[in-house]
Image (cartoon, rainbow, N blue to C red; front, side, top):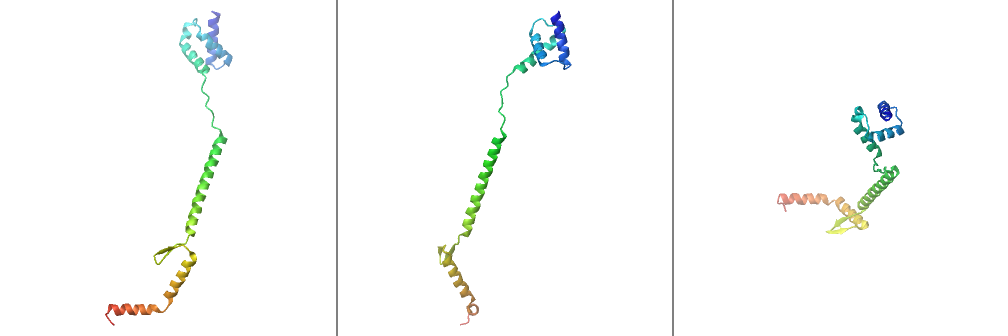
Length: 144
């Protein structure tokens, strides 16, 4: 009978939140026994479940280390910087290339291209413009 009073007292204290961890463990053990008062039988399954939850060994999830994440972020940032720098340098290299087609041939020599441009500009500034217009008018009106 003393054991039943002890179970009742511990159960009452448990529901009031006054038990220690050691007393809770003792309460779990007492509810495993067969001689539980009839009025406390509805609590038996609850205490057995609480004991099972407390004794379960949960798989430890390794926390993600913040320094590992930071390292990955730094590595990704560096990869992006290297990628963008490479693209920009490649583009700049392409833009500095000088290409011209002179008399149907591709020429990349800047000196040849500049000389041909000067020659073309020189021929455009001569006074042949008036002669060309006059020839075109003569052709239009069939004047010889």
